[in-house]
Image (cartoon, rainbow, N blue to C red; front, side):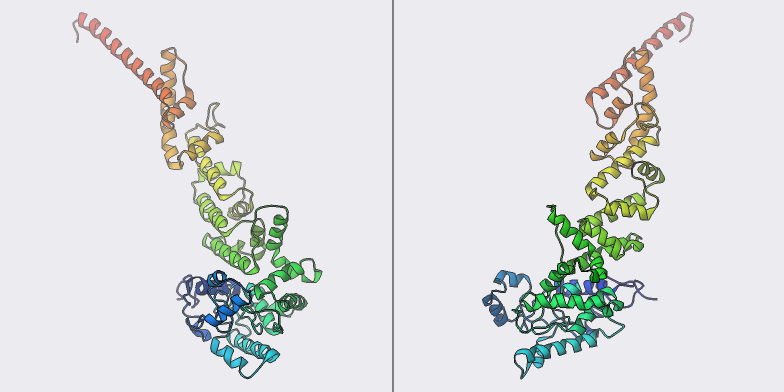
Amino acid sequence: MARPRDEYDFSPSTTTLTPSEKLYQYNQVVTNTGNVPTASIETFGGTASDFIRNPTQEAAAIAAGVGTKAEIEARGGVNASGYYGDSYNSQTSLTDAEYRAAVAGKTGAEQGAAINAALEAKMAKNFPSGAAGAGGGASGGLGSMGGAGSSGTTGTALNTGTTSELAIDVFRKTIGLFMGEAEMAKPWVNTLYTSVSKYYKGGASADESINFALQDVRNNKDMTDFTNRFKGIYALQDLKVKGQAVTVPTIAEYFASESKMGDILKSSGLGELATEDFLGGVLGKGVSVTEFNNRITNIFNKIDFAPEEVKSTIKRYFPYVDRISLAKALATGEKGATQLAQDVAGYEVLSAAESQGLGGTQISEGLDLNTATNYARAGLDYQTALGKFSQIAQIMPVERKLAQISNKQSIGQVGIERAIINKSASDLTSLQDLTKEEEARFQGSSGRFASKNRGAGQY
């Protein structure tokens, strides 16, 4: 039986990952932790020590104005081949030895062509047709074209807009990794390639080129399939233009967020929502991965596992048909996780009151949602509220009767709530006074009956 897949292991598992998920997970480990996943790096002939920083190249990058020392440091340095540490990937980038072998004895454009050929050969070996996602690759794919078949110093620190070219065949394969192999032969791939190449030749990095191209082709009717894939990015760009405080991700960041959100949905049994279309809509509303995780893992799961009484109350205020419609509403709604959590907590307290017949829809002085929410903010949860309102239900008829006997105004449910839940001093005093008066009546009554009975020869 296949064993479960851990976060960074691509050996056989019961979980089927898309190529983009595999690529994202693989490179996140390499880039963020420096740990190369077993069962995938060896498969493609790489080693954890493939990337070696080169002081000479780093100095050249600084001298060329490509970046400051701090910026280069933040990206993990530069190796002898000119790759940044955070964009280098041993499966899709040339090692120093491979780079030296490719450019040996060549100059100018010949070097670029030779590097193209070496990269294409490596891609063909590591990602043969029909097995493109079988182990890992460049982080975010389209956002990390460096090492994905680009030429010369593609995706490196030293692309200054010389004779560098992007290899169309490798570009197609990269597109195929993320959008499916069927997309590789579509006409729009050539249009995108032309746009990306234009920026790359002008001196932009590979990451910058692909993101510039995204905007460049937005209104191209021949690019509908591609632009629909990234509708979330366009939606965020529009919000940014309108002055909203949102962050517009790169394509690589978009893929990464989409993959993480998909994992969150699957872990909550909502895998059918882990689609490009649905998640594109979520991302387009400016919902971050952290916010999405809070809405699904914390809010949705809390409702999903709540007692039926609580669910019944929630549905009156937050209508939903089933689990899927609830998850959609939570993920795409205007309310954030913090507000949703407060709302759900209020519904729970209200449900507890209603279980004792003390809700606003049941009696005139019953608990309303606003007060229930305030109680929840003060720390009352469903189980605690059940105990409190059970106590209140027992006290109410006794307090009403004693107030009537003492010819006093009853403090009612509201006053008893304040006494039991808020520990209101004045309301607690009112209850204590009624109790003392009843005790006094009982003692006085006992004395009179005792005297009378003693006169009758009894005691």
